[in-house]
Length: 145
Image (cartoon, rainbow, N blue to C red; front, side, top):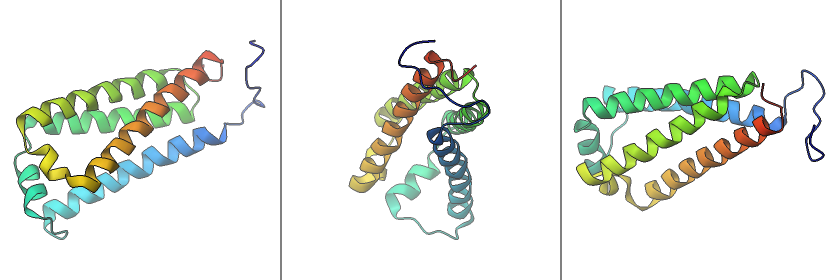
């Protein structure tokens, strides 16, 4: 055991693990609800986001579903204190960066986001990067098995 390793009582999860788990599970539920409300017409959207949603391709939907599954899988894995959490969150991070690059060059992604949307998006991706680093640190300390 490393001298700087965090000693956890057996069976007790770090509080931040709970926070990561709840954040991603609640985010997945919110995103599903948001898509349902937008596509049912119950939640009106301005023209730029409406055009963005209408123009989503098969690639976009596959990436959206896959990244959602990776986030939920990572959340479950970190909750269960499994090493694979780092790999799932890292794969999700790489996938969403790839998606941003593709969308930036092929759609009106930047216009659809607007100023506040861009800040929110950067915040969410910053959180994902921080979660990747956190999962790596837990794994290197032996907390994730």
